[in-house]
Image (cartoon, rainbow, N blue to C red; front, side, top):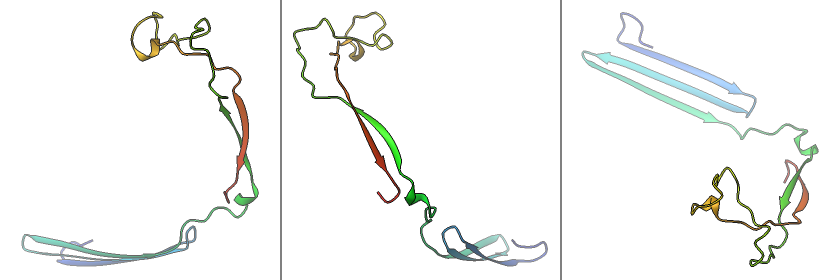
Length: 118
């Protein structure tokens, strides 16, 4: 910013971004005297949030969720309980992966959708 042979420099920049209708200005001043150097910079920005594409609200995105039904199982009937092999390689032990879990049957699949307005 300070050119060779000078002790001070001044720089400015003005910009506009159509993406968010932002206008910005920057002004910088630098100087040196003896062993002291200083830089002062001022920036002003004014703009809006980036807007979505004009057609984004016309599109609806669908997705599926899997949720369990009511968890009502017989805790005394353990013949259908399971453990994950990769969490409990020996099939026994006290770590959390080796504690048997009941099989929950009859999960519901729910189709849901959303769009940019939601």
